[in-house]
Image 1 (cartoon, helix red, strand yellow):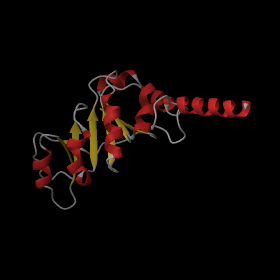
Image 2: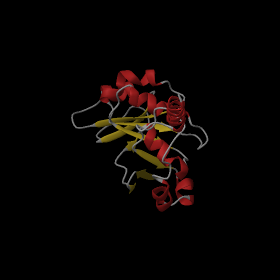
Image 3: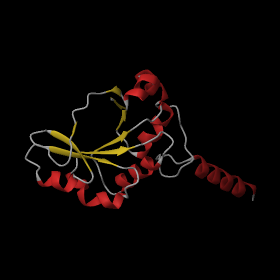
Length: 173
C-alpha cells in the first residue's frame, strides 16, 4: 500500500490487527466492531485507530472520537463518494486527529479529499502502480473552486454567482 499526504509519500507507522488484540503495538488500527474492546486494552503510550466502512453514520463513532489517533475511512471504489461526506461529518463532530481515505481513489480526487478534511490517502497496490506520486502531487491545487458548499473557506462557485447577481441587481437600481 502507498500512503500519501499533501507533501508526497510517507511511511505508515500503523499496524492493522485482527479483532481487538492490540498487544504491544504502539499504533494499532482495528475495525469498528473491535474498537470498544481495543480501547479497553489501551496501555499508556499506545494509540488506537479505526477503519470504518463508508456506510457507517458519523454518530456511531462520536462516543470514541476523543480517544482515537487515526480514523481511516474505506472507499470500496473511486466512484463511491460516501467517504467524503463521512469525513466532513467526523470533522464537524470535532475530530482533530489524522483522517485517512483508504481505497482506490484517483489523483483528480486529491484536492476534494483534502478539502473534506482528509490528511492522507492510502492506495492499494494496483492503484499505486497506475498513478505515480508525481501525478498525485501535480493534481494537488489544480481545483481552485468547487460547487459544493462548506468544502473551502473562500466559498463556492454557486455562492459567488449569487453574490455577483445581487451586486449587479443593486447597481442597476
